[in-house]
Length: 310
Image (cartoon, rainbow, N blue to C red):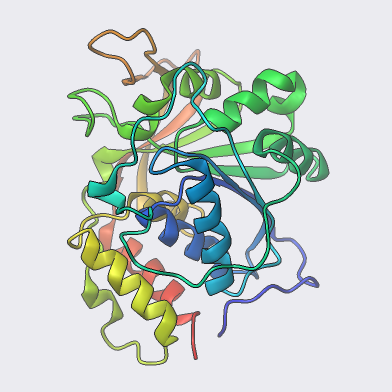
């Protein structure tokens, strides 16, 4: 089955993906686009971090062209974090072009006229409280939307966060990158009142994505396979964290969940960017993934790849 849009499908889950493409972001977007019978992808919103916002926005447009989903609008996000400027692009993890130096043909369309924070609000209003936001980068755009539109929290059904960890971080001992880069924004999101599913490094590290995922799948489009293989190789078959978070929407039972009260430290101390998880039944605001069925996740990824057929 070729991944394509179908305007006539009903009862699909409305989704907005907030992302900073990004090697692992590619696989998150590919999952979102591959199941049009399940997900109505309302928009992709971009933010800098892995690279500049100009680069991540171009990457999102180009990815959607490759995946034949140019029906999905792309809204350009902020050019800085809430209180700080972006740091230099992280070429070590995402290459000079943000996509592991893998080249994707350029799209011939431009971003939506609305900035990302306004696109989030527009889509949320249109979805009448059913929208699920998947945020797999710094949470600047979403925080701006909450700040500018106080009623937004009543318009979003759930936020799926790839970020944080219950154990060791990857930027500091305590902090994961997406949260650490804009901890004040993450703090706003976790305090928004919208239910949150947090999928952090404690589980995503356990599910590296290897080339063998293509074994036995012979009908994949060569251009898509070449890009996916290039990205996997660039990351030395490490985990594609963002796709693991999105996979929770395809199979909730991939994860073992803990109901918790989660908050973000944003005080520039040694613990800046840490996600603190407390089993406080009086203040529950999140489900935190604490275990993962890696084989179930790999089945989801194989199913996704099969949908990008020749």
